[in-house]
Structure formats: C-alpha cells, structure tokens
Image (tube, rainbow, N blue to C red; front, side):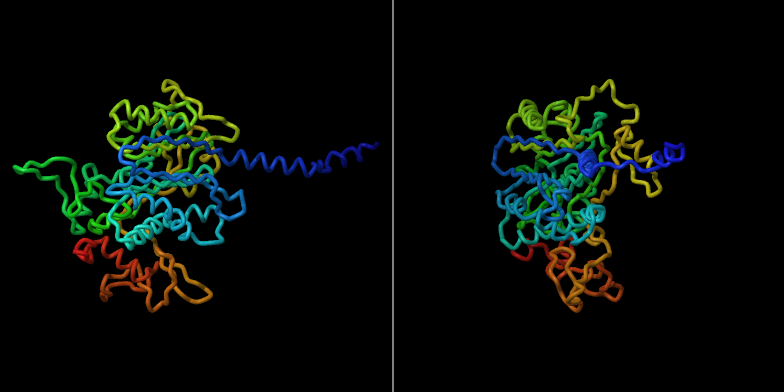
Length: 430
C-alpha cells in the first residue's frame, strides 16, 4: 500500500454503528437529566393537610423526553374543602395557562406567569362553591435541573445543596413576621391586630380582620376580605449538576424546626427515610400540636442512589455564593464554574401581590376567531368585552384599556377587589 493510500485511509472518517450512536445519545440524555427520588411522611392532628405527588407529568403528552415532576403541600384551615379543591384543580389550571407548541426553554419562562394565573383561577373557582375554608399552598415543579416554587401562606420549601448551604425558596406570608404584607392588607381595607380578651389584653399572633386569619395570602377563605390574596411568591432556580435536596413541609414542621436543623437531621439518608426523620425530629422537639406533613425530594445525577452527606468541615469556601444571578453575557466558562462549585443559578423571583405586575404585557389572541383570551381563566372574549389588566377600574381618561394582557369581567372584578377597589367578599355577602 502506497503512502498516499495510507494518508487517504487516515483522513477518511471512522464509521460508527448506528446502535452505538443511539446508545451514546441515550446515555447523554440520562446524564443531562437528573434522577428524582422522593419520600413522604405525615402525622395528623386535625386532618387538614394534603399533598400531591406527580412524578410522571409530560409537557407533550406521549413524549417521555418532555417529562417533569410536581410536588405540593396544601395545609387547610377552617375545614378541608379548599385544600382538597386546590389539590384536584391547581395543576390543570396552571398548565392551561401555558401556551401550546412552545419548546422547553419557552415553557420554563412562561411557567412563573402561568403559576400566578393558575392560583388566582383556582381561588375564583373555589369562591363560587360558597364554602369558607382556606388553604396554604407550596407548589414545586421540577424540570431537569430547574426548580420552580410557587407559594401562598406559611408552608415552606427549602433547598439543601451539596455544599451544605440551606436556602429558603419560599416567603412566609404571616402577618406577624411580614411587615410588607401588613402594610398591603391595611392599604387594601383590612385591619391588623391581635385577639382582645376580657380586660382589654391582646393575645396571640397578629391577625387580619374581618376573619381573624393570621396569614395574608391563601386560596379560599371566602369569609375573609379579598385583601387575603391567592397571588403566589414565585422563585425559579437552576441547580448545578451536583444536585440537591428539597424539603417541602407544612408549618407543623417549621414551627418546631429551623430550616438548618431540618436539613441537618436527614443528610445522607434516602429521601423516604429522610422525610420520616424530619417528622420525627419535629415531634420530638415540639410534640404533635398541628398537622405535620413533609415531602423530601432529591434531585441527583443519573445512577446515584442517594445524595452523599457532606461534612460541614469540608464545606466549599465559595459556598456562601450559593445563588448566582443569571448573566446575559455569561459564557460557558462561567456556567461550568458555577456547576463545579455547586452554585445555584437564580433564574426568576417575584412576590408582588399586584396582578398587573405579575401577568406582564403580552396577551393571547385566538388567530382563528380573533377573540382575546383572559390571562387568568383562559376564557375567550370579544375585543369589545375585553378589559386590560393595566386599565383603571372605571376606565378613567388616563387608563390604558388596550394594553394587554386582557381579563374577562369576572377576573377583572377579582383583580379590583384584591387591590381594595371594590367591596370585599364579606361586605358583599353581609
């Protein structure tokens, strides 16, 4: 064989069997997508806690590669009907608010807004039942390494990373601790104060009146003013490929344990056992004074049976930089560095109770019929009947009636009531 033929053989691309290529792609996909392991434990005092676990959801029905998982806790009060209703309807209401035919990145970007619409729609639908119970909600969506958490009330979700830094992914909507929420409630027409007993002594936590609820956000509570809003705090983060652990629990856990102690009590244990240990630790610390429910969800690299414990003494020196803001100009080097040190990339966070600030300015138009679509309930309406979320309550000259998104009359009435522009539910039904 001549030297020229040898060179030609070397330059010719090496052929790889099709089966080998497919195997490589499947292995690559598995490495890119984490494994989800979870466990649940609970002890009932009143029987008003409910939870939702759906680990097999699909963005595109019938396509396993579009899978995502949902975990949620509903802590009911004044009865169980609101918690059950939210468990059965919230997920569908959220998904119905996400545009069809979009790719994964667009789906994740649309998710925070859809969560707001889904929470508000669920609240409106429950009001129509005429029942008075309410529920907190902590709702977690996991798609690959991206975690999106929406919450109202005081059920909490924490993240424990591989560098043993514990971060809160929710905001407690308790009037006692949240000054911003107290100011919002009073500005919207509610009153905040403690219970008065005989002799003028005040006892207990701060509550809003009428109703006496110590939370400023929930789903339900039809007997309380509309200033108790269902608009959730939403936070979206992307984990490094080292993974992490979520602990989602009702206030029966958090009234007994700090976030750090809850995380430390179960490190290195499988998720199912970890959930039981967290509940056991809360019971040991405080006793069973409330419903106590805990979900532990491990987001781990493929083929890892459990998140390994990381001793505190080996904590990474950069672990204080647990949250890194997304930079539009960040290159691959920055992203790789974030993955190596276990930094969590913060993609989105918003907690405003103003619906106009949460729904943005885009709106949906049915191209076939020319109808506008309500941003909350997804009902089609004619342009003549459509009301902009940004317009004034009585169409003042300064309002912008055609700046989207649009609301139907029912959802617009809900928006105005939450902002104190119309009488509250209690006033209307008195």
